[in-house]
Length: 131
Figure 1 (cartoon, rainbow, N blue to C red):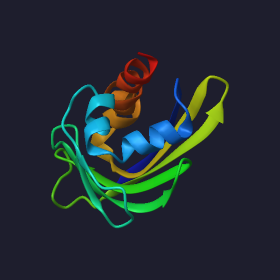
Figure 2 (figure 1 turned 90 degrees about the vertical axis):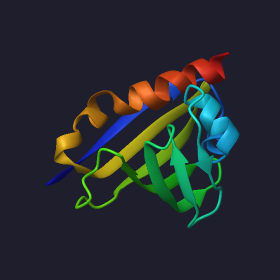
Figure 3 (figure 1 turned 30 degrees about the horizontal axis):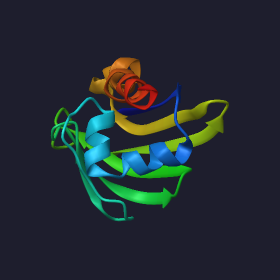
Figure 4 (figure 1 turned 60 degrees about the vertical axis):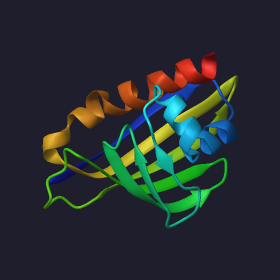
């Protein structure tokens, strides 16, 4: 079984800054707390993030607005299908409202909904872009 969830937060940066950082290896690593990443900025391109904990593929890219990627972590079972994320970047006063729709998440990984995005992305991004 799988589940879907949505998380949202405010990041003190323009949508294009976040979009560009998400798809740049060096900056992605820095914005997630100096955890190495290899990222491509083209549809169909692969990425590895959070020191190899996360891998996936770019499905759809709408510059400055939307990123859709397949995603799986080292905690997925071999039999688990890839999950999918849709990252929406909406301009807001002083920054961006970021929304992540994460679908097809294996049931045993409910912690991703509860704290995963917040601790691995949103909090480090706030520190990085707020500096």
